[in-house]
Image 1 (cartoon, one colour):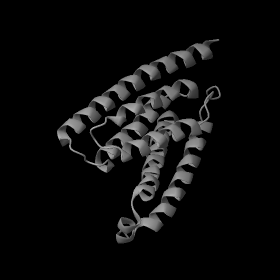
Image 2 (cartoon, helix red, strand yellow):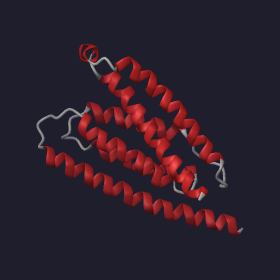
Image 3 (cartoon, helix red, strand yellow):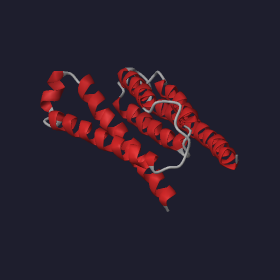
Image 4 (cartoon, helix red, strand yellow):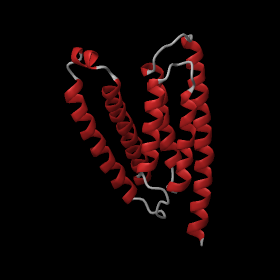
Length: 178
């Protein structure tokens, strides 16, 4: 039961971090004239920072409860990578399939060396890919083409996540047996 609790806690934490980052990116990207029309901007920025801080604490606590070897990749590296890709994704038109740049995010799980990290990172990337579909400038593309591109990217990410998860489970099993 504790394993499933930790997985659920990690997914909720990563989604909360993703949504908080989207609010911060959106507030940084929107012009001031649009922001003034939206009365929620300032309170949402403060709330987003608080939610990110709380989610990072929950994530650290769930990782502390696991019994696995230490990570070889600092946690800020995949988060920084995701923020860079998300910013680029939300500034480029839908004609460009920037969502494909989220695939290396799942590869960070190999360095983090924790069970189900690949699945958590895939969920994190999926949230940003879907949000990028709605927050990116429309351009001249047909919406169904952008939707198909994003769905194929999500399928690739989840395939990679399950393969990496199997590799990590095997690696951790062999380390426990030694």
